[in-house]
Amino acid sequence: MTKQLSILFFIGFIFQTQAQIARLSLVGKISNDYESVESIHILNKNTKKGTISNSYGMFKIPVKENDTLVFDGIQFKKKEIIITIEILKSKTLEVALLQNVNELDEIEIKNHNLSGDLLTDAKNVKKPVSQVGNGALNFGNIDFNVVDDIDAIDRLKPPDPFGNSRAQFQGGGNILGLLGFVLSPIANEIDKIGQLKRKRKQAKKTYAKKALTVPDEIRADFGDAFFVEKLKIPTENIEWFINYCKPKGIVGLYMSNKKIELIEVLMIESKAFKAYVKKQK
Image (cartoon, rainbow, N blue to C red; front, side):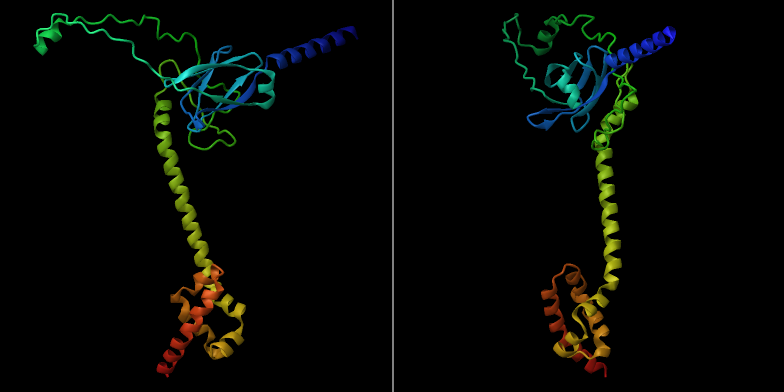
C-alpha cells in the first residue's frame, strides 16, 4: 500500500512539474501608429525560440510566466516585454513599436591637401577602418524556427483566428521561406481576385436562373385582371406581352423590387404592343 501511494505521489509530482514548465501559445499583434507592422522578429530570450509577424502584424509564440519577449525590426526601436500572469490569462498581447529615427553625427570637413583633380584626390583618400568587429553579426544559438507544438501564422490568409502557415529562419537562410515571404502578398492578391471572379460568376448564374421565372412571377404578382382591365391586354396575349417587355428591363426592375417603375414601363409598352399585334394581324 505504501509503495502504491509513493508511485501515485511521484506521478502527481511529475504532472505538477510539467504544468509549471509548460508554455502556453500566446497570440499577439504588432502595430505602429495603429498600423499593422510585418516582418518584426519576436524572440523568447528564455527558450531562444522565435518567429516573425505576418502581413497583418500577427504572431504566435509559446511562453510562460517571467519569459522575456524581444521585438526587433530594422525601422523600429527594440522592445522587451516580460510575460506576466495577466498576459497568460488573456492569451493575447498588443505590442506598439516606435519608429527608429536615425541622426547623423557631425562631420568635420578638412582640406586634406586636395588638388582639385577628382581622380588624383580619390586615389589619395585613405580607406576608412571598419568599426564593426568580427563578432558583431554573430547571433549565437538563437533559433528562429517556429516551435512545433503550435501553429504558425499563415502569411497568405487573414488569421483564422490567427492562421496556420509557418515562417522559418534557419542558420544558412531558408531560400524557400524567403521566396514565400516575397511572393506571399502577390499570391494573396491573386487569391482575392480569383475569389471575386468566382463570386461574380456564381452571382451571374444565380441571377440568370432566377430571371427565367420572373415573367411568370410578374403575372402571378399583378394578376390577370391588371393586364386585362388596366392595360387592355387580352388574357391569351399576357405571356406574349410580358416577354415583349423584357428588353425594357422589366426583369431587373422586378428583382430589385422597383414595382412602380415596372408598372410605368408596362403601361408605356402596352400601347406599343397593341399596335404591334394589330400589324401582325
